[in-house]
Length: 356
Image (cartoon, rainbow, N blue to C red; front, side, top):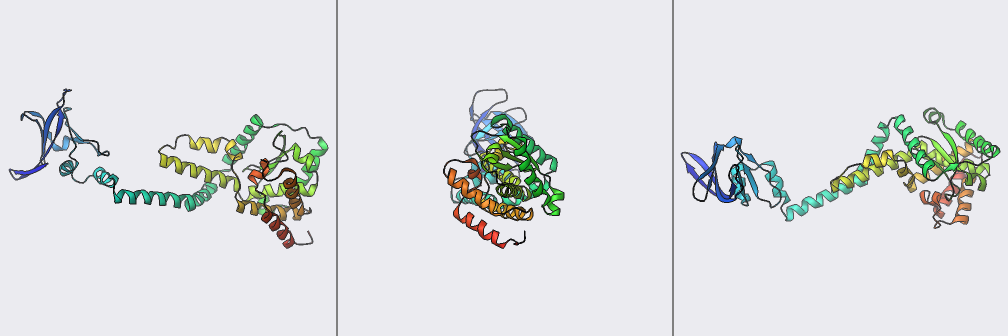
């Protein structure tokens, strides 16, 4: 590039190649630009194009690709002289970005800053965003999540319950006493519904969906008929609903997926896959903190409803002895069992009022 003064105006001269208007042949060329005009000449000095500067189209820089200038009549000039091109255009936003993209200490710093920012969002920001999303979620959407998840369950893994009317009535009586014992604010804000399904291969299982739909398998009722165990497990699942653990897991999973997809450059159908397809909810595991909260809620509720809260501990003990933590039992995969947890349950029972 060369800068010269002609009639009081600075001329920026950049060497490169050009295609004349309507021409397909590439020729060596020189671009001369002043504050008002631009002129394109070939190596022989023939004018290929001339136009007011403000009518030119300057392409943004992309990596090490040649920079391009397009004239109003279609003539095209390109050059690999990036520094010279900046002399013509000045420090545009694109040029500044291109400088930061150049490999070197600055680029390494930018990459590290992006990685740290992404980690900070994942570690702290997702929790905040999940809380905001939960507060903004209308009840109608939560109900739709329950319906969608239940539809997936009924389509892929569940059959109509084969329990007798007496077996159903026994569990429903426990469920009714638990809902009646709920704190007044919870009772006013949250509705629960109990459903029964025969789910071969899933074993004794009970789970609650975010909107309060609770599902208990036939195997659970048959293997654990003790009302104290039923009360402990249903109370535990109610705790997940009341503390909105399902929605939290859903939105945190959504936030993680969007963050990863954003970094990868494609957010595509993630929202539909996670929010609208119910099978995603079934694959999300509870955290240890959520399990502890649900345990304590269930123990308090069972005791308040007149049941022995130790039923939950008995259930964990029996399920661990019969199935083992490593047997792939679905309930244990989302409700991790440990000796520490059993000990916490027993210690928490001791803190409950003895007259309940």
